[in-house]
Every structure is written in structure tokens, then in C-alpha cells.
Image 1 (cartoon, helix red, strand yellow):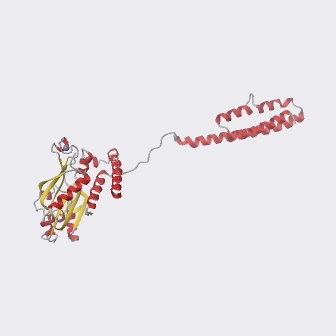
Image 2: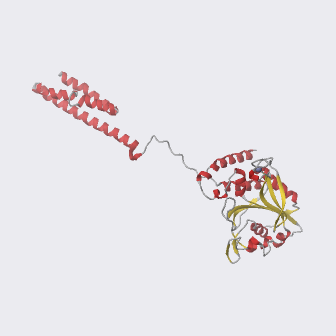
Image 3: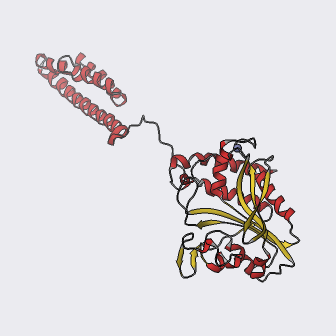
Length: 356
Ligand SMILES: [Zn+2]
């Protein structure tokens, strides 16, 4: 066997390098074997005319076959490399870009406050019930002992739907609906939306949440009423939070009281948020008026009770220092998503409480 044929045989072994080569190595292999100027195979083919006819034929055939094998292997490797690059960077995808975290929705801050309030009262035996938002005048006013000439009955103050139907101005109608359906003892909390013809400004909204609380049983006294609400305030705000009751007036309670909690910002020493008083008004309440029980055919000589109405938006504003009620309705995710963290902290706290 001639030297040239031996050289071609050892060149053939180098074919194995092609499928593993990266782009740079592939270019080097291409130049080394097939380069027009100094490629090994090119040189051998150039030397053919000087060979004896018999050798020329054998060397030429082997060299040409090997050249085609190299060309095919290099072509294939080039295509492979190109394909994997396209898969990575094709269609404008930049794989070096950091990933976008998946967006998680959360429970609205007002709903969180409603749930937390109802949960605390739930531990005291209050059931969570709801009622219709479109009410009759009887449920919204008369059965609750509102006189016919009360200003709330004016179309200037309430949204009437035609006839004696209106959008409820408070969740108190559910007191009546419950008294008519279930015999005492009754302990309920009633969260829900209410509607009044109020301006839409920093502290008012024509639609708002309210939580009604209502307890009726034999022997319920003012002490039960104060203790229940004070306990809630200590659970909801902090274990040292003080409350105070100021005389007030509502048609469906007697006596009636506004409940204030110690200012959560200054701790009671006085600050602009509490107008230097150290207290913040938080709910209206009182002992159930005997006329309400009588209107529902419940014996007011035998049964007594207490009721209150609180605004979860206002409570959320106090607790978190939110200056404008309209933020709750804007659906601005930058505002709302701050509270998804709080939500998870609270559920952690609740889990720990449950463990105890
Ligand atoms: Zn204050």
C-alpha cells in the first residue's frame, strides 16, 4: 500500500471528530482537510497527476470518497449546531432574561377585615348571616321603629327603586328577617353592602360595607353588651386597647351608644388623626328597643338584646392608616397588593391561635 493510501486511512479516523466539534473546531477541521490552499485532501488530489496510472486510480478514488464523507459530515454538523442555536434564541426570545414571577391575586383588604371581624364574633357564638340588598320600607325602616317622618326615608337620602322598595341603607333589616324566622336565642353578625346618597369623597361613599351585630336572649344586660364589644376591640386591635361608650340615639336601640376605641396611632395621648382627643369613633350600638321585638312578635317582657353596626372600611382605614376611602374602590393593584402580605401574616396568626 502506498504512503498516500496509508495517509488517507489515518485521515478517515479523524472523521469521528466532526460530530463532537463546536463551531470553532468545525471551521478548523474544514480548513485542515478541505481548505482550497493547504487542505490535506486538496493537496493529495492536486498530487494525483504525478502518480503512476494504477496508483492514481486507487488514491484518487479513495481520496474523492473521503472528501465527500468529510463534506457530508461537516454539513450535517453545521446544520445541528444551527438548529440548537435557533431553538434557544429563535422568535426573539432572550433566554438570559430573568423570569417574571407569576402574579397572584389576593383577598381585598375590606373583605379581609370583614372576615376577621366575623371570625372573632364567631368564636363568641355569633353566626354569620346575610340578607337582600333591595329591601322594603318595612324591613329597612318601620319594623326597626323608624318614624314615618324620619329623614332617612327621604328620596334625597336613600336610593329608591320604585314603590316602597329601596337599596338598604344599613344591614339592620336582617335583625327583623332573623327575628321573624328564628326564635331566640339569636346571635348573628351580618356583613353586607349598604347604600346611601352620600357624596363620594375621602371619607364618604354612596356604597359601603357594614357589619351588623345582633343578640337576643333571656337576661341579656348592658354588661353583656359592653363586655362583648370590648372583648372584640381587644382581639381586633390589641390586648390593651380601651373602649368608651357615649350616649347617642338610634330609633331601634334604647339606650343607644357610640363606641370609641383608644386612638391606634397615638395610643390615647392625642394626635391629628384623633383630633387630639385620644379616641376614635368606631360603631353605633345599643340595647334592642322593645318596639323592634314587639314588631316581630317576640315577647319584649321576656327577651332583651343588644345590637351594633360597624363600618369595615372605616375600621380598615383606622387600623392601616389609609387616608382616603376611595382607594378601596379604585382597584389599583399597587395599593391592593400591599395587603396580600398582611393577609398571609394574619392567616399564620390564626393558624397559631388554632393550634393553642
Ligand atoms: Zn391619636
